[in-house]
Length: 262
Length: 220
Image (tube, rainbow over the protein chains, first blue to last red):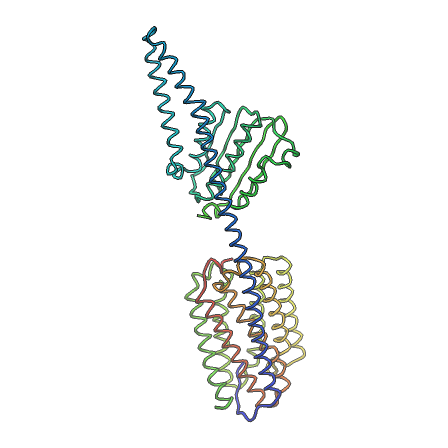
């Protein structure tokens, strides 16, 4: 609004109004500043706590993966390469009587060497870090099939997405825990894993084992741990089990969360 | 320096600031167009035209009351629409719609009771101010519940809401008291000078918001 005219003395009321408005404005600004800063500080400290929890959980996950890898190597050395070399030794002992068996011995030793090379790749931390989630799961699938633990298969759908390394570690550990439960408890014959990169990342793993009841679920076979870890990376995780029919894990993570925590 | 001189200087500053806000919002339009503030350049241009037009009318006819009485309606409707869009709550959106309807009804009632060409419809302005303050406080309560508060200083809508809030809180008592002291030129002018100061503060908030904006935050 526009004003015109001349001015004489200020009235007391107008002065009071001006002072009142100035004080009111100062009060509003101070109140807003206090409320927003207080809320911001609270949120920042909550975020820092969540970050620390995430880092702690990540470190634990990495240790668990390392332990699982060492356990797997031990099994491979004992049950696979150890068996092959024992067989080669027995064959070699009979070579004097049956010289034609030398080719078989050479073949067995060659297979053992190949298995050892594959194993040494798994132990190399740099090689493990460079694997994509699909490749890491494929290695597990190959191991299950090689060791005759279960008949496992992996299907990948859509264009492979780049997943943040920390998210990848947590996802892999959740799956590793599910696979471990399947092999130890489910008595399943098949394990089918589907990794779908369309509209975010959707992973399903299904076995045809004996399943479990909700009571067992409550007592926990690492399920709550899996749920907590999924929550940390913003993924949704659902495990459905039907007695005598099998167990199915469904895990989804939206696209915008896939690259976070890098 | 007397209050009349101060008002003249403030008038030019206000016009200049309206111009800066309009130009800045047009320059920033590529970033604003995907956000809730896509119509803000229109409001800025509208404010500039009305303020410039009001100045000219006052100069030529010494009466710009009709222009400002008519200006109040689209202005407040825009404010309510802005905070309706900014809210994620269905209830708050409904409240904002009710505010819009209440304001339009109050304008028509005022038209039947007061001369629209000569008398300032201050009850409509006071009602619009109070409802706008409620809208802004509801918006603040909502953003305080989210983590947007962490990046609030880069949120253009926050700065715009702050400008509106300070202006509405300050100008509400002025609108009431100015009409009581309407016959006293000194009181009228002193309050007018204060109202110009509030407009200057509001526009400074708009300018800061447009300068510090981060498109991703304004898009939410």
